[in-house]
Image (cartoon, rainbow, N blue to C red; front, side, top):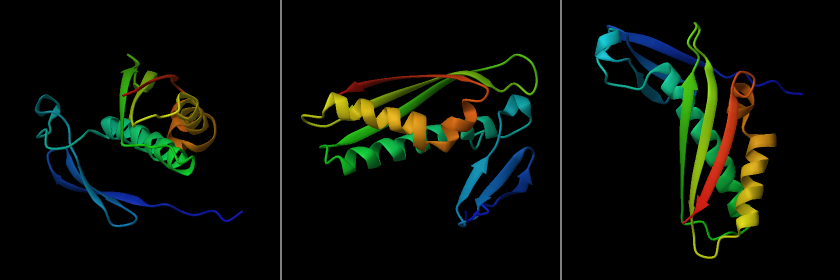
Length: 141
């Protein structure tokens, strides 16, 4: 098995603000609230984890529905999460809400796409599932 090494780095900007750089050269600003010593000009690292989860499963679901030739016209994935009280304050409960839009979308196809993402493809979900209870729900618009 070929093990691909992924890279990422952060560079300090000011306060608790950093420029995050992916191995492929993309930039994202990481920051925290003013109350916590930041400038509130970017997502916090823990918010980025939730964005990564939403993005990971959205990629999966959209790709699976496309391959099933479903008439996908829109997809929004929202993530709600609760962190533990004790440090390191990991996420303990996560809810993923899918809003799928398309004329004559098959409910079975949507359910199957979400299930495949949850159980087979989404590596972010698999990692977070080690510490958090993850629930999902969906609606077809």
